[in-house]
Image 1: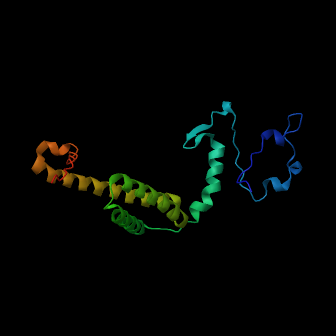
Image 2 (image 1 turned 90 degrees about the horizontal axis):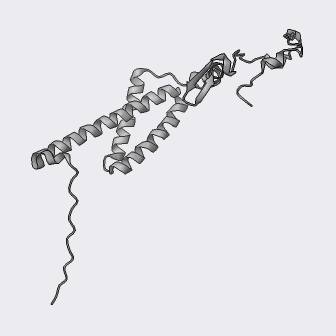
Image 3 (image 1 turned 180 degrees about the horizontal axis):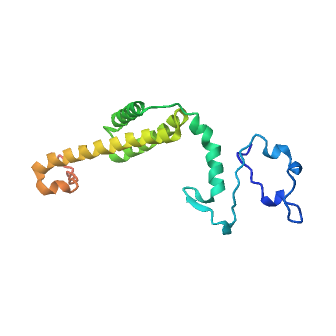
Length: 180
């Protein structure tokens, strides 16, 4: 079943250009529906840039009405609950990625973030799920920065300003053959 249906204003006009009588409009066209009145033609100047493209205002409102049940059906969650879930997600991410190289850790974090967004978005309002995951991701970035600064500080004592450079690659030791 489509979430919304566009009805042209011409559908409610007679061939002579007059508005049809209210009794001439089928009841099932408007019964138990939200009716959003708007214009989508270029001259209406009602276009807005959205993350999914340039849309007329009436279509934006229709999308809001269509997604409202998902947002309103989410479980309420206070600030303390959201913080605790974000801390738990942060702990899980750090436990999983603490022994991985940066590339592997970034892949694991990306998959975990997407999975968390999908799971939490079904339980809580999608915006709440986004806030929780964004907070946990920020904590991971902050702790990773602190870890990098700590490592840099340790290397600074031994290498000085060269600690800012990438570590040297270990040199290969040539194979030696026993000649007897």
